[in-house]
Image (tube, rainbow, N blue to C red; front, side, top):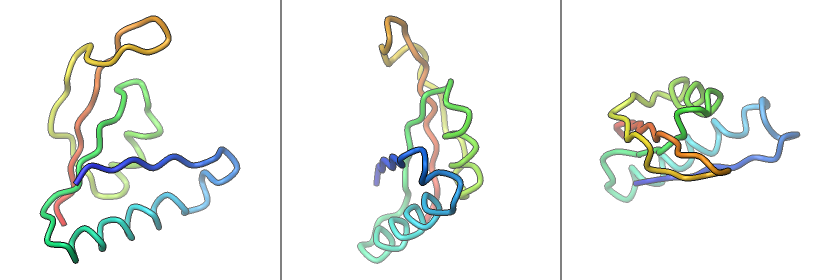
Length: 82
């Protein structure tokens, strides 16, 4: 199950993201899903650290697959077994 979580800046750093990830993981597990997948820009250090802290592990990198703000970006695939 792929997921996306976006928080307003004033909601960050308060445990809300972790609560959402954990709730999504529980719902996915209840539905018989096996793995959660996140695709994070390689430049998004906070997003990568957040996912690692939530039990996600890096599964691979896709070089220059995203184009944003006039430049190509690498994508990091991270997964968490449910």
